[in-house]
Length: 189
Image (cartoon, rainbow, N blue to C red; front, side, top):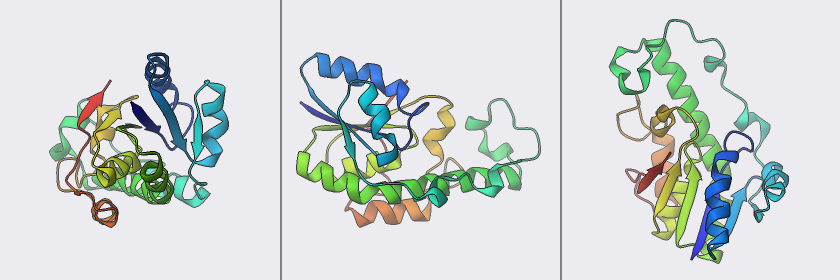
């Protein structure tokens, strides 16, 4: 089976994916890890095969100003209680979600082009790499989102965490013929 992994950043995003990718490789599957060019060396150091899908502009990756010093106390169970947020907290989450959509937009063309050529049967992406769901949707193959921290990152592509997709994310999905309401078929933690 051909399995395409993808992430947008090395370190905390890539490292949790490595054991599964190496286990699948060891079981005889073909595995590729599609990443922005700045992550390719980190993938190669894990013994996996990197596929460079272009560079991410620094302006896209930079954390939005709204997220740098959020005020107020966040409830400990904030990922499941979006109704308890202040307007500023909703703004922080929206800024983070919009950032991940911009990263997905920067990755999508190269990722979908490679996926259409290589024809994976499964796409595994880190929870914040929305381009993985876009590629899986464009090809009509299953997507698995792999967690690496807070479960809240599952919902940053949604308005107010539990609403419809962010407008930019919906446009991106439609651009590649994917259903904007599509989510990963499975979440792996």
